[in-house]
Length: 84
Image (cartoon, rainbow, N blue to C red):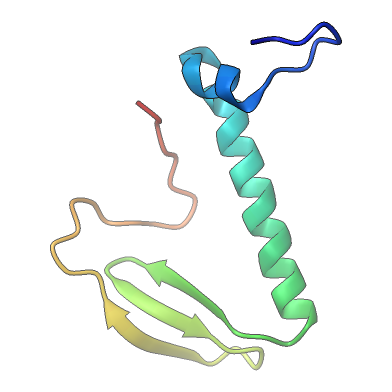
């Protein structure tokens, strides 16, 4: 439900398809901040690149640590997702 100050609860946003873009923006912002924080701390980042699971080290080295088997979709950088 929308609150009296104009803000919306998470449940309201989840239940209102026209507001799903707000969830996507929040997720992208959170992931971007987490990646920046990990890089600043000189930690590695693990992510999916296509069908592979990779670990990107602070020095730029990329190590394949697994594969996504039977994945229904290929995951690409800057892929736009639609929430149903």
